[in-house]
Picture 1: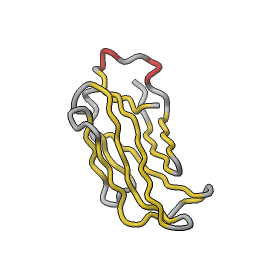
Picture 2: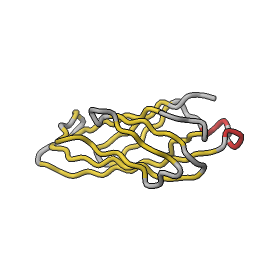
Picture 3: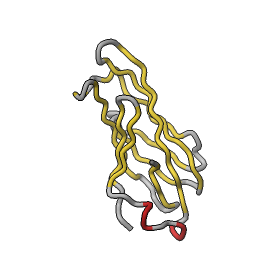
Picture 4: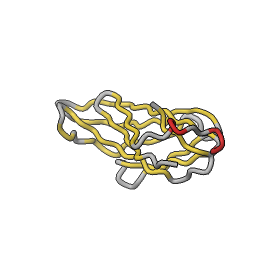
Length: 117
């Protein structure tokens, strides 16, 4: 599943939840957020690193990445990818906007409440 943005979307909040064995897991240091293609989407992390704002820059598809170290039993480096599609508003269809988007990789959940258009 991809986060679907229009070229007009800026500062869209996304959040990070880290779990281990169904419980919140501690994180060592701050998670690092980045975009694999800043000509399509940029990412700006919040001060605590547990959320970020993504902004559309150009039409296309890319991935965002969150890197962190969690300590469930022992320190473990985790990298989570989330897909982002940026479209022109005229290209959207009604099925591209579910009520919520969740992206689960390993013990990482990245979520964004998507607005209905």
